[in-house]
Length: 68
Image 1: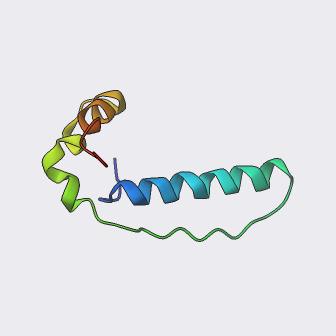
Image 2: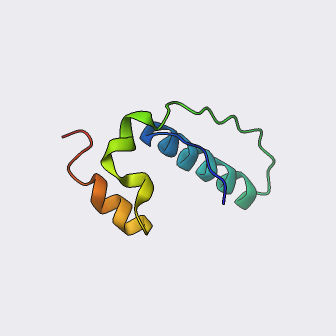
Image 3: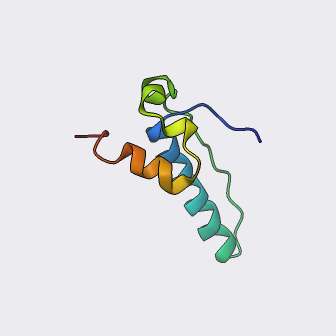
């Protein structure tokens, strides 16, 4: 598997970009979408989110740690 070592803001931007793309496809339109990697993952490394066994475990790991 491959991935981008990025932070929460990047995940939010990716989620939005995918949504815009899906909306364009559903409408039968083409779209040029720019996706910016907004932050690195270094500040989240100590949370354990990157070593969680499942997505659900990663979410649980972050619960209460972000924007608290």
